[in-house]
Each structure stands twice: as C-alpha cells, then as structure tokens.
Amino acid sequence: MKYTVTQRPDWSNAINETYRFFNEKDYAGEKLEERILFYCQMMEDFGLLKNGKRIVDLGAGIYWFNPLTKLLGAEVHLVDDFSGGGGVDNADRSYSTEILKKYREEWKFPIHEQDILSTPLPFEDSSVDAITCFHCLEHWHRSPKHLFTEIYRVLKPGGLLFLATPNAVNIRKRISVPLGYNNWAPLDEWYEEEPVFRGHVREPILSDLKNMCERNNLEVIANYGRNFIGRDSQFLHWIPRSLRHGIAACAQVVLQFFPTLCSDLHVVGRKR
Image 1 (cartoon, rainbow, N blue to C red):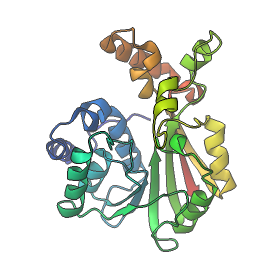
Image 2 (cartoon, rainbow, N blue to C red):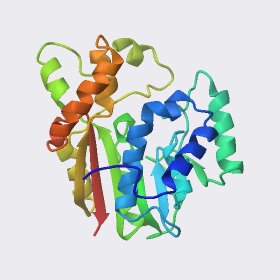
Image 3 (cartoon, rainbow, N blue to C red):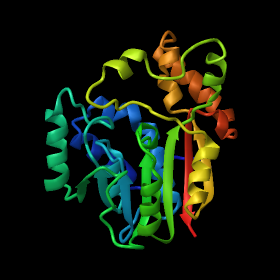
Image 4 (tube, one colour):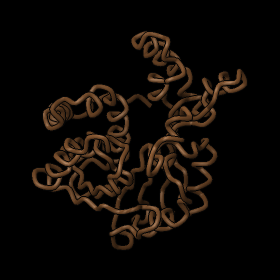
C-alpha cells in the first residue's frame, strides 16, 4: 500500500497551518513529518478523516498528528497525563504549557489529563470510531489489561484500534545484540532519571501486538512495517544523518514486506 499526501487537495493547506501553529518546532515538524503523514494516511484509508468520526488518541502528548487530523475533518479527543515524553519537556514546560493552552482555547480540543492505565476512559460505551496509540505502549510500567478492556468498551462495533510501537527484534537489533551491544537505553537514562523513568520499559514484537488484540476480541485486519525510528538510530549515530536516512529509506523498499524486521510496527484491530 502506497502512502502519499496527494489523495486530497486539502492536505497541503492543513499541513502548512499545522506548521504555523507549532512555530515550525523541529520535534513537531520536519523530524516526524513522514511518520505523521503515514498515520494520517492510515486514518484516510479506513474512512476516518471526515465529519462525524470520533478519534481518541491515547498517550497523545504534543505533536502535530492531532491538529492535522482535526483539520482533515475528524473529531479528536486527547487522553494523556502530559507528564513527560511525547513532546512534553519536563525540563522546560513553558512551551508545552503554551501549546496545551492553545489546544484548549484555539483548537477546542477535548483534553482528558489522566493515567490511562488505571483510570476508566471518559467515554460512553460504543461511542468511539477509532482509538490511536502511537509509540506509547512501550513506555508503560504496568499491565495494559485494564486499558484494553476500556478500549473494547468504548469502541463502536466495527471500531478500530491503531497501535504503533518499536520492534524489539528488528533487523538492526538482531545483528547488534549478538555482538554484545545493549538493546536498551543507556544506563544513565534509566538510573538517574527521577522521579519516574519515561523511556522504553518493554518493547513488543509483532505477535505480541496481535496477541493483545485477539485477547480483547479485536480482530487484526492489517499490519505494516516501516523504518521511521531506524533512520535516527542511536546505534548508528556514527553514520552521517543524511546517509543513515538514505540507507533506511532504501531498506524499507524491501523490509516493508517483512514487518518483523522493521524498526516500526503498526497493527490495526477491529472490534468484533
């Protein structure tokens, strides 16, 4: 399946307006552009970017998927504790606070600040068309069993869950780990970070994501592999960034047909 931004004439205007909203901040714009457009194209492919469709983004953070999705027609709800990660910088919260204020006042986003693992989702039964959870699951310190029960409850019959995570066994890790390199964040990031480590706690593999969906009566109807994370791999920092991106882009031409080897996993589950 090919993902482009040419299927609808309003995409370019929506992208430009989103850039202006974020003042062209790098983490919200260029660095994530291809990944975010991929997410939006998935939404478009499943008929979700239009009036009357309610999308809930779990672990929403602050990035331009949400404004862009709203500009393209959907009703978007944000659910997160906004306590770090996902564009929320705890070292300097002034920018994050400013953006969240604009989210509420200018964009009229319904924002629900809560711990998604322990608190019921603030939606009625069978009231949500789609739930997105992009690069959030790998940061959770506790079991998501309660959350998946809530996801099933609030999704409409036939509603969709979109999961995106890093792949614990991508092709780079299959090579580097047997050579003795650590598969996790540097020790200092985990040992020194207080009060709560916000990095990766448990990265899944493709069968894990499928298993969690099936356990909760969500039929897996699609899965995709991409190499967005691989392009900025810390392990390959010694390779110039432009060359690293070029290698990852070329590898993706082949690896997308073998999702279990890609750096990014995407699974779509449908409520039975």
